[in-house]
Length: 271
Image (cartoon, rainbow, N blue to C red):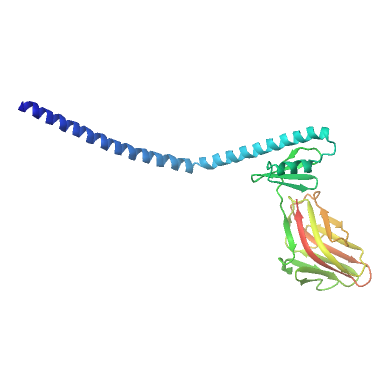
């Protein structure tokens, strides 16, 4: 009887030792798993896998958006067979009203459609999707934001321009040629037009208001483009200019009389 009791105690002790070893093994296993998890996360973030996954998702969303727009255009062409007067802009605005598009922007020859932060450009004439156009603007002068320190005036007066807040006043009073030049070279590879906003005052005796582009300040060896000096806004096409860097200028040619005065409101290079 005594021996049996002793045997049972030894069995209990052995069972107790086995339970203790199992608990320690579990703790060690958890620690090892945590270490391995930390190493794995570090490798994933260090290799840029998360960034690549995000980029892949972004590309998928863009492709999905483009596919939806292509289907919309197909739907438009089908409906236009029944309604010859149906306009693409009105059709897309109806999709906006149905919350299928966030915004629709009429951009002249094209229409920009926006959804979930993605933009696509649609050709109005061919009803097809173009590559996304990024609106890039280079502002040489904007009323109230740029002083005259970046400009040089030459001609029949020592000072043919003055700052008249919020505009640059470009003026010449005598017969002859006066030029207003931006001092720094401009990279125009990505631009197709120059937009000039101005207001005119003075006499009517002027034989030319030209936008000039040159390889040096004040030069017009690259482009001379005459604009209508009475229009408040003029657009100068420069898409044919195959130059990386140019100098921009405005040139007045006064034939007779008391000269000219212009308030230059803004000068912008546009895509």
